Image 1 (tube, one colour):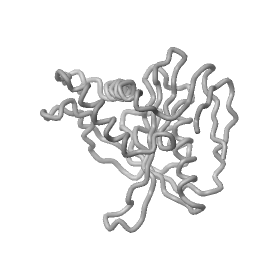
Image 2 (tube, one colour):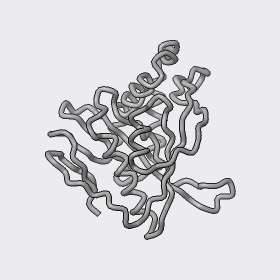
Image 3 (cartoon, one colour):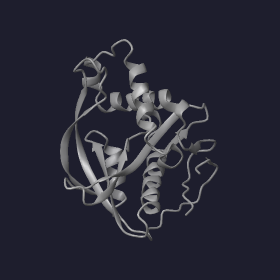
Image 4 (cartoon, helix red, strand yellow):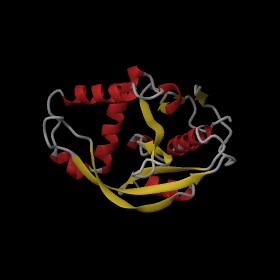
Length: 210
């Protein structure tokens, strides 16, 4: 299945590379600070924490198939302004069934929201789910920050159901300190069917998705 969506002229969509780790960490940090500006302002970034966060990201990425499980959106100035990764997880404590989890679903830089990037990333996740469901319906789940109104509207528009909220400790600033952003997130889920239509014509976008 072709998976395209119209983005802005001269943007590039492609899988993440290992060399993108620092840029993606910077993107996710900018998003976290935008979602929790007051809490983030009270926290300091300990010396060396950025390097450790990049190392942790690289370690996690090595557990993925980056070419198929991730996407980044690259702006004309070569900065990464959107990111997503997806993978299967167990849907129950007994490990008897699986679902697909979207990580970093709010992974759009605050300066680039409202331009279709979040929609593209979400459709990629749904397309990925169809490719790994082997012709069967599969549940896809995500957690959305309570302050991210754009993401809430996007998920509602795409037919996702809000399942409730929980507190999540995100953006640990240093592995040796308790400084974290502790934030409430809402859980969303949707059953993705094999025949769901996700193809949208691409316009003036350099699509390098494999």
